[in-house]
Image (cartoon, rainbow, N blue to C red; front, side, top):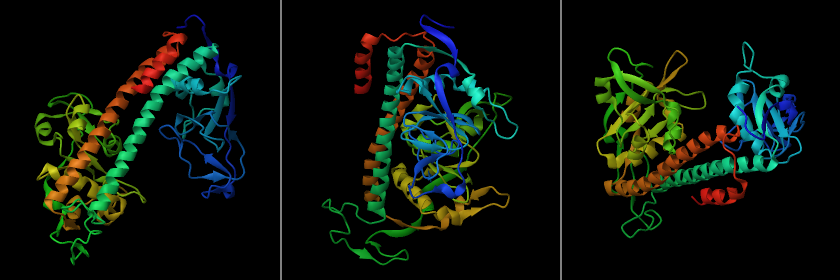
Length: 437
């Protein structure tokens, strides 16, 4: 379907393209010498690529603001080059002819990316070549003002999403730092609101070293009521598998923790399992299978009221996870950040087993045998109050991002086909309203 002023063309009619080429390995480094190097889709991020490799002999270049796309394994990851970068095999760089603004091209490619993916070939690694890319037929407009207006509308939505993500990252870092300051450095506020140890708080010897007077040595199991397995159920409703749920996997935990919904699949489980395994606010989810040589098993998810409300159906942990219910929900934030602290300290490598190449976390041994310091209940309660406020903001921002993404994804195909025409004279007022929202 096309509309007035819009037409179907091949990409070769409107873009220039550079296919990546990888230099020899001796030209790579991690010291920042040369240009940032992008190979395949390894460093495609949410919005801005993260670079940890640089190159001193650059075969092919993507200029700042070029649209970069992965062309193999998998095809179709898109981003915009934040600076001049060196691109290796597996990446191409595209730019509009007679334009120094490629935001429109980025959204044009986003709109057509599934059709691009359908052009891939290869028996081992799917890929597309230069001919495949340039031969793709798309619908577009030559009107530069309309192109700019469309890109501005969509990029304004993306910028608002990115701002929320940055706020959430800052809040999460604050929460982790607060945990360390209170429960590792022992600088929680004393009765006068002063840092405990700095203000002369009494410390005593323990099997874990010096700790505040009145604290005790214990284990995580002291705080736990139950640990139950997850469920995977069936892909479709069949026989007694009638209860529709979302199954939270280890891969979904990071997104859920920062206020996003993740990609938890819908499954059908038994009614008796739903009653037993349904997640509630105050639960913690632990991934017990997976990991890698550099990343242990044991990622954790935080289940709050806001998380529960984000899903239309009940949620359960998948069968590769475990659900922890605590004796008192006031301990949720303390155990959550303690767990993350231990995970980042790589403690969990010592509690893994498995002989088939898949590592499993021996969660019972961990919670029953690993010694921790147990603070006063009132300190934990104060920590919980602060962190719950932070978490509510994180979850609110995540909910707003979901709404913004839905608006963007609804507008994208209509704007990119000419079905919705942009009233250019009203654009600035609309964008100002979105930015202010």
